[in-house]
Amino acid sequence: MLGIALAALLQVPSPLAVVDDTIRPNVNALHYEIAIDLPDSGTEIHGRLALTYLVRRAGPVRLDFDTAFTVDSITDVHGARRARLDRGTGWHRNPNGDIVLTPGVRTGDTVTATIAYHGRPTDGLIIRNDVHGRRTAFADDWPNRARHWFPGIDHPSDKATAGFDITAPPGWEVVANGRLRDVDTLVSGRTRWHWVESHRIPVYTMVIGAGHLAVTPMDTAGGVPVSVWTEPADSSFAVNGPFHRVDEIVRTFTRLFGPFPYEKLAHVESSTRFGGMENASAIFYDEKAYASGRMREATVAHETAHQWFGDAVTEYDWHHLWLSEGFATYFAAVFYQQIGEDSAFRAQLEGAKRAYFASADTAHPVIDTTEHDLFRLLNRNNNQKGAWVLHMLRHEIGDSAFFGGLRNYYRIYRDSTALSSDLARVMSNRAGRPLGWFFRQWLLQPGFPRLRTSWTYDAAHHTARITVREVQPRAWGTYRLTIPAELLLADGTILNFEIHAAGRTTIVTRTGITAVPKRLTLDPQGDLLIQQQQ
Image 1: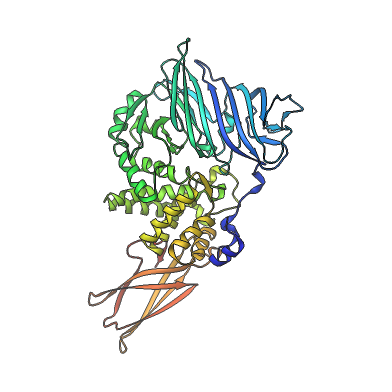
Image 2: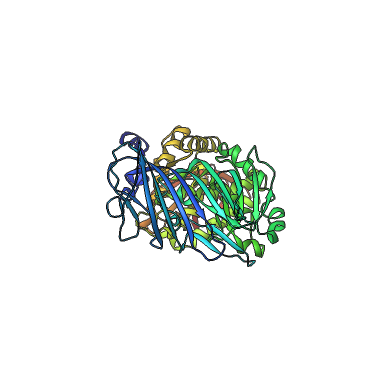
């Protein structure tokens, strides 16, 4: 978060660093060790969580948890002391069903609480038959639905490492975050899989997936093992269709941003309410899109970009979700530009622009602190407008500063969290000039510039006087813009120049105009989120 002096230097107002600190716990999660026994039939699971956390401030510790589960026991270890906590004195459940631990801890203590529980998940862990009628189990946590299958601190600000000890029915494959440490076959014929994620990741990306899945290794991308996990019936389509360039996607983003952040990358056909979910190192995709052949490579590029931005660099607060979704939307398009498919790049940008212009989200800013429904934050502001904010920033400061700044941002905040003010600081430093005004107008103001142009021509003096008016609703404010312009003259001559607009009305005088102006086109290359009105 920016200090006061630096914020003033960058002209960044406090909303660029806005957070809801009422949700911050008094502990910092360090490691989740999650053990789940998946059933052969039905949906009841038996779980055990060993959560290691650092006490930031002494007091009761609240862990988000679903009321659908029965807590069987809680054991607490800190220092040399180990104790089984009694219900009522050592822990209780509040009216929301959350677990509240009341151990005798001090600030600075490192504690491991082990919680045994059982029940039927109502959400978060989906156990059902898939589109092919085969039994599967998949976690689907975003934004704060992990609490429906294991207790924890269900907020993006508190990242931790994780381990998964999953016991599954015979013949099932199990995938999770991180690296597979070992697989054991039990006397019963069931198998126990142990995955370990050694990087700190947000809770909403901590997942498991299990079923009779076909696993296809793909080309290794710069030392990163890549694989595709599907229903056997869908494996040919997946490997030869939307996933045939997964290695190239990883290599492209590695070159642009820095090293791939995780131990492997698995692309998994799954049960999820989203088209794709960017779980760290184990991306889950909608099974219906797989089975119907509707899966697209652009979705794969979007979710893969999230591995860098959203997973490795995570928004500290939900109201800065554009740092995840806007990045993934933009760089899914940039992938095509980087491999020479500029028409696909432009088509995706134009599609994002049209979707944003047509939405009701234009009435709200990107950082919308009035919105508390987390699902409603998956909107055209955080996705499409967020992508355009990045594209306009690139246009404003040039490719060298833009990509260099992003590499610095990724390096500084990898495995951590960031706010919009952090991005503004890094990009300002890289550009060598304050960019607070840019982030302020595009993130804190609703809407976009609607521009109306007119001109007069003085033939005697070969002079054109061009007027640009901002005619968007007053509630949207005004914008500071550097607008490429193209002036077509009656004799066929085309003049290219820039208009530096600020405020409701900007007047520019051009001399040496030897023929009558016929048409003025603003932003002919389409690099700005503006509308030119008739």
